[in-house]
Image (cartoon, rainbow, N blue to C red; front, side):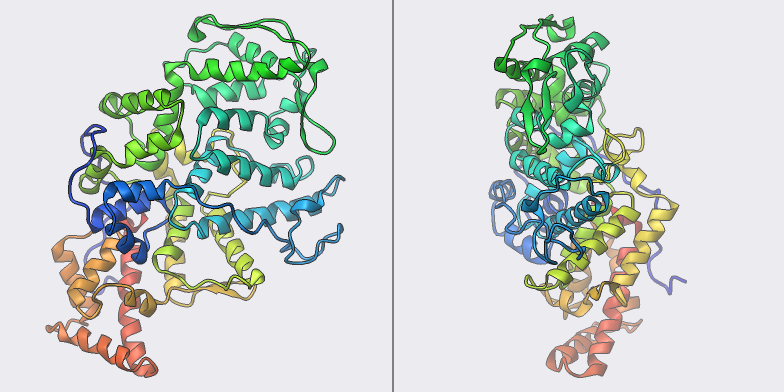
Length: 547
């Protein structure tokens, strides 16, 4: 029953993108809608306090601050699984204890701990894009730790997170090399067993197809190129202590010749320790192609802007971005800065070119935007319960950190033609609505910890909640990327906040009565009931799933 509220649109009524402007600097209005758009794309949700803060800056200042690297996490993953045969006490870190024996159960417990901890890093992102970019590269260099409890040490996955994070806003060439020599990657894609007598092509193939030049119509590398790259990569391995090592005796020191796609380049074979440097020449060769820069810029565009790339986008956006990427020496931050300060990026505010929130955007953004109360910093058990809860919910919605079961990444980031629309189906859409209903009512509980939206506390963060017109507008601006028509907002005010009364004073007085005496249970209940109904309705709209 819709109780006379505005009619809801259907989930498949997706807005279409507008025609693209170019990368010229944006010089238009800088207000709530533009700030919310920027924050929803670069962070996980747009908090009321962050909206106010970034509105006080210029657009350029806001983008520059978002692109500032964040400090390293102060606390490594903790033992939240209690029993540890190596002697790590509950709520102490297991990172420096090592795990040099076959103990699948302990390794699985530690991987699960790491998954929770990583979810916590997203939850505690601050005002930097750093954690979202780390997640972007996790999807780009996709791996599934949950399929390797027996053979890949949990510490290696933590080290890989640190590698992704250290390079997330830096130099792409360095990032590719670091991941190429990353012990978890060497084990995951069989690089550790790649030697001159029996070259293994797994990583050499993915390095080209998924990580650098892609597999588009202009990516014309050959099977011989895969084989040659595999020979270049022989000898890079992992020792018994799970450290990277170069085994010169396993390296193919003959010359490796590549196709016309790589300008018939030949990497001269090197024997002994210098053989390890062939990987640098290989990466230089891959990134010297025009297609490499275009491929990465397409992925950044699809992730942060929109997933449909037509000829106009290729010409006006991708091509110029790729030029900037190459000329900057593959500086990731320069590409992002150009994109987030462009006319094209802010034209999307009014064009309707939205993307569907990923499960992590949906869940972490939900907590952030409602400023949901979280356990104190000294309550490790409470914090990890919340992390586990959100990780579990994200997994149910098909986005599990460290559990990407396809090397190409999570399906909605690459599966044409629907892309991000694949996040939503009859099951996941119902689950999302169920979860928002749960949080705005009784809350979600796990291991004694609880996540609950406090509609009264959230409403206090808004500029003028006593005015029902302003309250509805401000709530819509934060929660809905596409907004609502004036007639819909008026109907929401009338049917929910005013309980079909004709005078705005009905809500103003109800809100003021609560503020005057928060301990008055009746006054608090009246205000809370109206606000719960308002926010529940907004979150049940299909538009709430858009960013």
